[in-house]
Length: 625
Image (cartoon, rainbow, N blue to C red; front, side, top):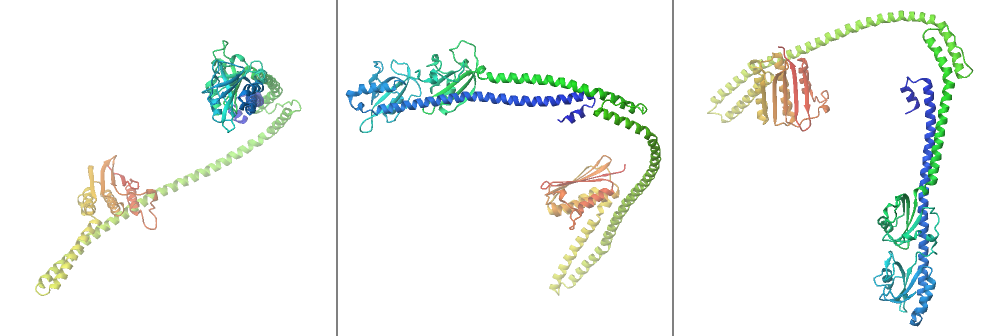
C-alpha cells in the first residue's frame, strides 16, 4: 500500500501527525532494508561457519584416504619381497615388514592359504587364525588389497581393524597373506593427535560402517558406538556428506546437561568409513552472534535518531503552518479584511504572501461574482422554463405513441377477426356448393353405371374409378372444411374441438394424444377460444412435420384469473437460440404466429426446448371475470 493511499484513508489526521508518519515510514523503510541486509549477512555467515566444518571433515577424510593408500602401497611393496619364498627367511622378511609398517600397524602377521597364522611380529600366542576375517579371505581369493569396514575382535585382542595383501607364488596365485592390525590411535596420525580448527569444544571421530568409533581426538570415545550411529551408517553407505545442528544427548557417557552442537560428516573414498566433526553452537556461531548483537544495537541507535529527527522536523514545519491554517480559516469564514503576516523567506513564507494576495483578489472580485451569480440565476430560470416546455411536448408525444400503439393492437385484432370470418365463409361455401356438386356427380355416375351394366364392361371400370376419386375428393373437402373452421369449435367449444382435431390429426400417424382439461371450469370468450385453438393446431402441425414425437399432451387450466395452455411432446427438440423466425426460408413463422396471438390476447408466450428432450409451449392469457 502506497503512502498516498494511507494518507487518503486517514483524512482526520493532522499535518504534524502526517509529517511524522512520513518521516517514520521513510526511516522504518531504511531500517527495514538495513535489517534485511543484516539478516542476510547473518544467514550467510552462519552457512559459511557450518560449511567450514564440512570442509574440515572433508580434509580429514582425504588425509585418512591418503594414509590408507600409503599403507596399501607399503604392504604391497613388502609382500613383493623375494625373501617370502624362502621359508628360512620368513622371520627376517616379517621383521622387515614390521619395521616398514610399524608407523601404522601394531602387529604384523603372516597367514597361510587357510587363514592360519604362520608367524607374528611382535610375537603373540593368542592369535592363531584369521579364518572368517573378510579382508584376509578377500586377498586369499585374489584381491590385491583389502581392509576391514568394521572393527572385529581377533583372538584375545580387542576389536581391531585389519588390512591384508596377498603374497604371490611363482604361479601367480596367492601363496599366503601379509596381515596387519592398524593402529589408528598412533600419535603420528596428526589428524587426531594434533587437530586444527576444532576450537575449545570441538572433537573429531573416525566412524566405521557399523557406527563404532575407530579413532577420535577424545581417546575415551574410541571403541564406543556413535550416538548418531544409525544415521551415519546410511550416510556412509550412500557416500553422502552433511552438516546440521544436533545435541550430544544421545550418548550415555556424559553426565552433563545436553548442549546444542554442530555436526559435520564426510565419507572416505577408499573404505566405508566416515569423519564426524562436532563443535558446540556457541563456539561455532560466536562471531555470528557478536555481529547480530552489533546490528541490533545499531538498529536501536538508528531508531532513536529517527524519533529525534521526527520531533525536530515536525516542530520546524508545523508552527508556521498552523499560523497559516488559522489565517485561511478566517478567510473561509468570510473575513477578507484581516491581513496575513508572512513568516520568514522559506516556502511557508512564500505561501503566506500568496494567500494574502489571494485574499485581496477575493475581496475585489466578490461583487463581480455576485453579479455573475445573479445573471446566472436568470439564465437558469429561462432554461428551466424551456426544459419544462420540452417535457410537456415529450409527454404529449408519448401519449400519442401510446394511443397509436393501442390503435395498432385493435387493428391487428380486427384483421384476425376478419380472417376468421373469411374462413367461416369459405367453409360454408365449400360445404354448400362444392359438396353438393360432388354428390350430384356421384349420383350421375351411378346412373351411367347402371345403364351400361349389360353393354360396356370397360365403361363400368372407369366409372367405378371416377366414383372412388369423387369419394376421396369429398373426404378431403370435409377435412379442409374442418381445418379451416371446425364446427365443433363454434358448437361445443374449445375442448371438444381440440379433442376432435387431435384424434383426426395425430391418431392416424401413430402419435399418442392426451388432453387434460380437468381444471377447466367454463367456456372462454369466442376470440380466446379461436386463438388458443389456432395455437394448438399450429403446434400439432409442427409436431407432425418436425419433432418425430410419439406422444403429445395438451393441458388446459383456469389459473390466477386466466387460462393456461400447455402443449408438450417427447420429440427431438431444438435450440431456441438458433431459431431465426425472420430468415429467408420462413422457419419459425408458426412459433411467431403463436406468440402474436398470445400478445393480442394480452397474454404471454413461453417456449422451452432442449435438443433430444422434447418441447414445451406454454401460453397464459387473462380471462375477464
